[in-house]
Length: 341
Image (cartoon, helix red, strand yellow):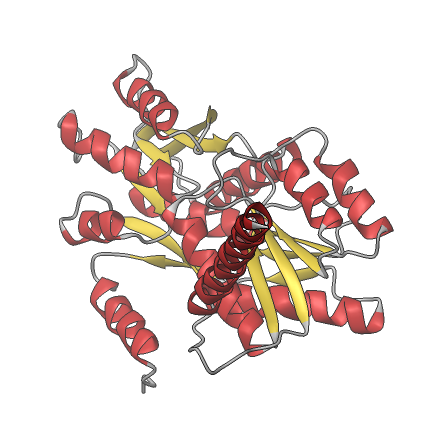
């Protein structure tokens, strides 16, 4: 009888620990969602964000898409974030299928199996929206990002203002996740924009170099070799925040400020500081709020009507040392909820 009592007590203790664990888990989830002990929020849809890039730029993108999802009554989860192992985009899409997610927002990583994974998701009724990089040959339902035509025009305009008389060597950085077609289109449009606006005194030798921006050390090493090599460029065009930050670091470490003009991409504290100190002449900015809203609209439209726009164009703009103060004020006002006049 005594042994039975001890066994029952042990079972009750184990059950109590299990219930306590479940309670703690859901309490932590409630805190993560911004809920207090007396509030429970229900979400109509569950979307997954898929990106193997965990840079500050991508974290900011996630935050704005998360906010747009909340406004629309949906919950956004970053697939694989915070786990002990890293997952490819293809693996995350398969996880999303197993979880029966309502939709997927994808930043492609160049995986060879990615298009097949997107096709499998749509076959299971899960629409996929790509951001910043497109996969038009897949069954993704929509692309939300900047057109390569617009980007080439903007880059071309800045190259015209930065080029000197004679031949200017210009290096356009590629990322390991960029598709060949997109890079070629951007390359062609940049060349055309410069050709249409340059004089006979200014010539451009444009070439590309590939960088794996998901690995900081690789990006630092490749950019350092480019800037210190025998054929160093006069102008370096970056395609994301990691490349830009690595380029700024190299300019300072190797005393190249003024010798190489860096056209940056995105705005982080490091990049903003580089602008303030006139280390770089310009960086590109993207309308993150519009990107988040368009992602949600694309998924909602497809789920409700089985169709949506195949392309949402996001505005790309430029930020310079002259315009950065106004940009900072706008950002601060947006974060505090104020309306700028």
